[in-house]
Length: 467
Image (cartoon, rainbow, N blue to C red; front, top):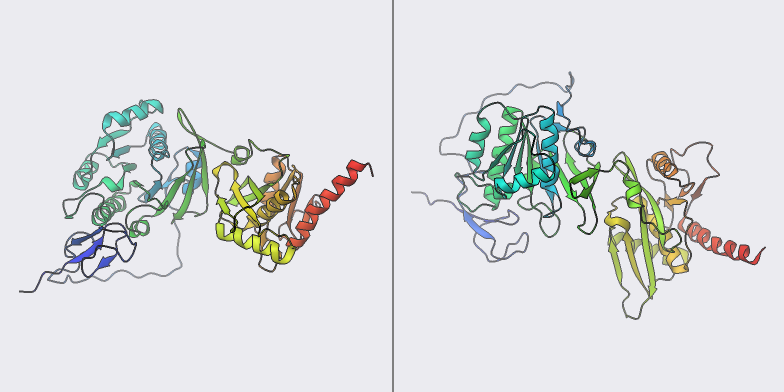
């Protein structure tokens, strides 16, 4: 008789080991490796009798293309992040920190769809029915026809969903609480999460219902569980924000039916989440226009221009190694900007502590913020406030040159709408509006930017002397 094969799987990252060990080689966590049977549950190997396959129909690349049928929620920011609404038969994974507002967002979306006559089922695996009802009353969603259940067993949930009319939207909160009888492991483990997600996706594809899954995140901000789950679903959204700030950002990192760089901005209040149609006003609401070390960056999030303030503080250090603290930007990119300033501009920052912050807790990911960061650093070091009606954007290369970035016209249009009359941008920008050359200052290299800021100090001194 052949010996039964077993494998050892890390319950934190899903790495498969040939034997048990105290520490996982994949993620470095201790005591997370569990013995599992590869012949059962999701990912099982072939049976003793191989099943004969059947030929599938092959077709050509040319032909009619049908648009994916969508279900708009009526919440403009949520529809923007998903690409126009939920796609029928799709699976959407939403992750975020505990208490950030994931359940609040989905309850409001469920109530909005229910008011439109859609059949919505909300399955909670973390809270009792009474707790969900209290949230619904606070969000003024208790009068809607959203169907509610508190269950964690996968088979029971699927049997409930199969009864009656097909649902338009199913919300599972959360996937870490699901468990199946077909997997011999505890709830929340890699095997159980993988089994539950595949069962829910199979139901969505077979019935055409939209499946929204809520996932926990790790301390690193990643969705907990095996990364294969993110590959299985059709869209992955992250609900970001800081509890110290009242705004929240719904960011799309994967979307098979729409763009992957869109965001939706919400503001948290005592009655739930409120949509923010113009996030630039939110991020610039408490701006100090006369403080040195502050530059307004005109950025892009997908098709939406966003203006945000970049704050820098350069202070003399008493330590042997100066400190470099960054909030809301890439620390490696800050080190690069500091090196370019020293090598090509003669700005000595080796004996100074450098602190960089993006106002409002917003996080910038595009390299177009290089020029705004450099302007804020030079402004703080010189003690000179930058013009209050000017925005900055442009990518800085290691040679000190300033490279053009995309969507110049949209950035300038958003800045003009908010009262910014001037802009410092890269020269030879491809889509610069015609007839406005006097309003925009085109910079070819970073030394030109430093000289421009230093020249403004000299000009201010001359004006003070009356010359």
